[in-house]
Length: 53
Image (cartoon, rainbow, N blue to C red; front, side, top):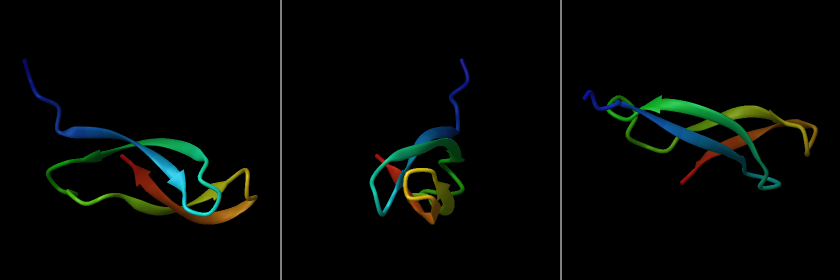
């Protein structure tokens, strides 16, 4: 059986704390936590979303 190299992550808004997005990342190429600018519907603006672990 093949072992998956991808990791499912939940992205959490850094301002209000709501969990808005589900994404995946390659564990081998990106070992650090994921951070990206995304739209938060609760804050109604683009905010920094960090990986929840």
